[in-house]
Image (cartoon, rainbow, N blue to C red):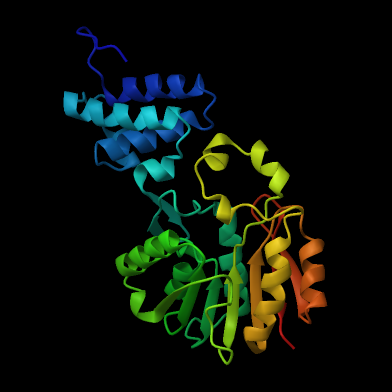
Length: 291
């Protein structure tokens, strides 16, 4: 990124240069990444960039952008560089302690909304593997009378979840607990709804993931064991025990688990078991009701 006295580094030039540079490093969506990183460096929105493409940058702004694009070229995810990621209707703080929320996980939110058309429902929900809190807080944002409990094995993830709850003004309706699945719960706890996006990637497939995922995101939240189902085998029967009668369990699954996971639901005693597909028409969510 050599300086040029003839041509100042404008937003337009940097977007073009940065896109080419990242593309040469086999980064997917290089232009989008550059626009996000440049907007962050300049403390602008992406729309602001487009409105002022010929604006030159000063040295401090150039340095701020250069440090960000260098991190991206080393396959650090944009969400970790920015420290945030949009999901559903909110923006969430994220860091390498938590999984970066994916658009396909919004399928789980939509599935729950279909089960509870009354947004004033006063139910108790449990999120197993709460991570940054994206699922739990997105649902609490929709159901303003509901309360939630989030459990995670990672203390670092729970710190991020607490931060997001505070930022969104939802901490008063949430209890966060450290532990393995339902282990921290009292035996008489019962919930109307349990949600989870557990680890479901087959262990031997971990090495084939994109470097951004394989080398940067927490393996605890990704690795589902030898066949990708190890957490489901514990989570589904445990959830059945802690649900109220007619309560629902709603979980995210891998695109190729649309037969195996529903079988585990049925074996645990769930009925009305169904599979929902994501925006790419892949199996993504399984739900079932306790008798």
